[in-house]
Length: 141
Image 1 (cartoon, rainbow, N blue to C red):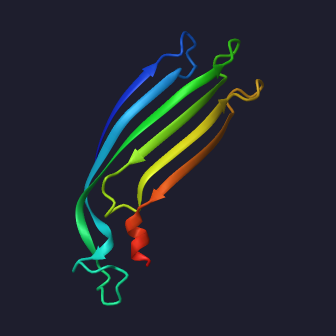
Image 2: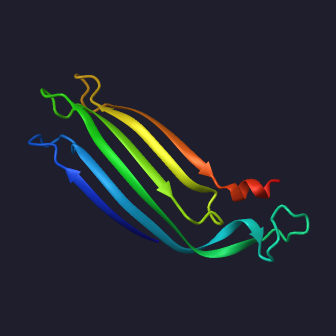
Image 3: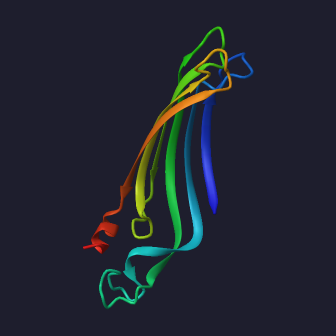
């Protein structure tokens, strides 16, 4: 497996403990292993066909790319380690034949130090969306 990522970050300032003001990432990964087809068996029949041998067709390699962002939207001036950040990540793969999920989006909000008297606490809320490939839906019909 190989992963390539570019990252760009802006420093938070003089406070050593403070998180960066923003970080943006662009990356991709490639896996050289074999992956099962989501729809067809090794003879080319649909896996949902009663005459299928049930052994999925194999594909060599898998790949995906992603983009991620982490942005501080508020920082307490008197205690810089206290901050609120938003984050997002989008992932996409062109290989629908070997991936159940071909795209996903994750977003969240992170509050670092929500209580002044407990500066190491973190409160976070996140949500995600995963797109199931249409090929998998076709197998079930």
